[in-house]
Amino acid sequence: MNFRQWALAATLGLSSIASAWAHDYTIGQIRVDHPWVRATAPGQANGAGYMEIKNSGANADRLLSVNSDAAARVELHTIETENGVARMRHVPDGIAVPANGEVKLAPGGYHVMFLNLKQPFSQDGEIPATLKFEKAGEVAVKFHVMPIGHMQKGEHDHSSHSMKH
Ligand SMILES: [Cu+2]
Image: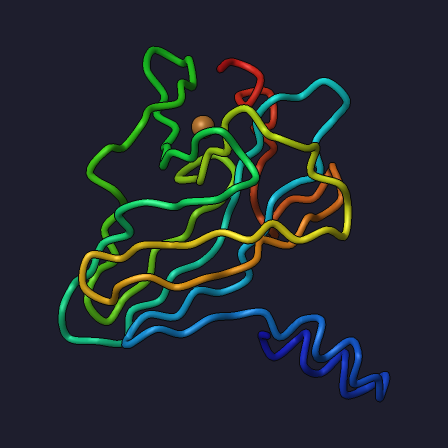
């Protein structure tokens, strides 16, 4: 929960809002903040997941993989632009989390790709998954299912990419 969310919750005096926003997971020096996916459109076979990963330790770590029963396969992807065309690329070596730093999985960049969903992602649902870090180990998280048009502040929509699998 950032300060703005905290201030909002405090102003409204609604602890239920505060707890709904408190959605982070800690393992060792790693904190996983607000994992979320977008609700899927009818017929959409794949979904993308996002989160922020913070590392308060003096050693770099790496998100190696994500497992979830919600999809037939889960991969880590990034988006690269070549000759003006954005394409998705599998990152088999995982995503580095710098020492005393953070990495953001966000629309238009790194994401968790859920391939061949067993059920659609429906709004307000939760998608359980296990994140595996090279050093910190495994942590179970839940991706919150956000409304279909949800974007993080300052991000552009790249939802069309998810149709290209
Ligand atoms: Cu992807």
